[in-house]
Length: 174
Length: 193
Image 1 (cartoon, chains in turn cyan, green):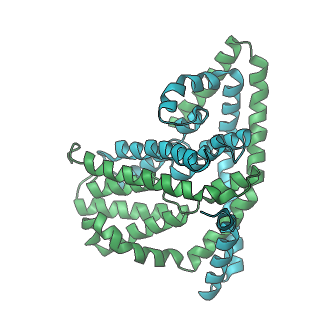
Image 2 (cartoon, each protein chain N blue to C red):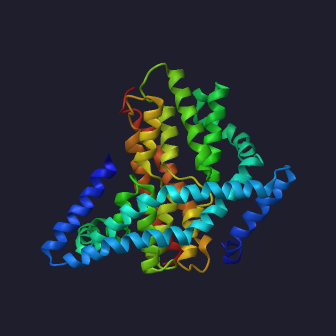
Image 3 (cartoon, rainbow over the protein chains, first blue to last red):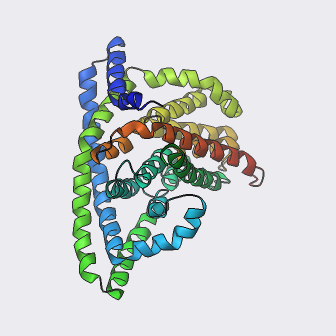
C-alpha cells in the first residue's frame, strides 16, 4: 500500500468523520470535546497500572532477570520467527492491557518505531486483545459455569496473532 | 488476582536476582526510572488519545456504528444461526461487532454482554453454547480497524508514518480471528456441553 495514503490516514479519518457528523446534524465540536474528556479519563485510568508495571519491568530489566528470561525463550520464539525481545510483551499480553502498552512503548522507544522489533511490538499490540480479562468479564457477567472450549480457542487466536505479526512485519519490512 | 501474583513475582525476582548479581543499586534506581517513564508515556500519548476519543464520539453520535451493524447482520446470521432467530440478541451481537471494528471499546462491552446473556437465556442453562464461545473468541481477538493507541505511541516515538503498520495489523488480526474461530469450531466436538 502506498505510504502517501497511509500518511494521510489520520487527517482523512478525522475530517471525514467530522463531515459525516455535520451531515447527520451532530454538534461535532461538542461531541469532539466530550469524547476528548473521555480520553482524558482513559489516560487517568491507565496511569496507576502503568506506574506499577513499568517500575516492575524496569527493575526486572536492571536486575538482569529480563535478559535471562529473554535468553530462555529465544530458542522457542526464534523457531516461530518471533523476535525474542518481545517475550515480556507476549507473556503479559493476555492479562494486562495497560501493562503491555507500557512494555510495547518501551520496545518501540528503545529499538525505534520503524525498526523490525518496534514494528513487531506495535503489530502484536494491534492484533491481539487482553484475552483473560475479556473472558473474566464475559463469563463473570453472564454467569457461565462451564466455559468449554472458549479459553483454548482464544489462546490459539493469540498465538497465531503473535506469529502472524512477526511474519507480516518481516515480509513487509524485513 | 492474576495481576497481583505477576506484579509481586516481578518485584521479588528483581530484588533477589539483582542482589545475587550485585546490581542492587541499579534495581533501586530502575524503580524510579520506571515511574518517570510511565509519566512521560502518559504525557506524550495523552493528547492524541483525547483527540481520537473525540473522533470516536463523533462517529458514535452520527450513527456510523448503527449503519455498520445493519451491514454486518447477514454475515453474522450465518455464523450465529441460533442468535439470528432472535432479533434482540442479534441486535446486541451486531452492535458488539461493529463497535469492536470501529474501536469503540466503551460501546462494545455492554452490547457484547447483552448478547452473551441473551444467548445463555436461549440455551436455558449455565454452560457456554458453541455460539457463546464464538462470541467470546471474537472479543478476545482484536478486530479493530484503526489501532489508534498504537499509532499514537509510534507517533510519539517519532515514527515516519505512524499508521504504516495498518496492512500488517489487518493481516495478522484476520489470521488471529480466523484461526480462533476455526479452532472453536473444531474443538466444540471435544468439549461436550
